[in-house]
Image (cartoon, rainbow, N blue to C red; front, side):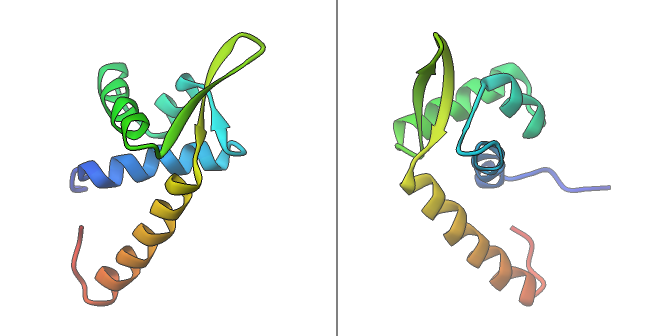
Length: 92
């Protein structure tokens, strides 16, 4: 059985979904891509917005979430941590 994702892993999953969508995504795409309930997604998006990893933009009157340079850097640094922990057989 697979272990539950940590909060940090969920945040990174959300950022990766947005990044894969060309740097901006609608909340429904993030919801399905990160495999979250609407309530949990809202909590995590609020945190990512507050910490400036994402920003809200409007395109054609629709809200989108856009990854910031800080969000991209977070993904890069988290990947380094994953590689180190994997090399030592530690799960995060």
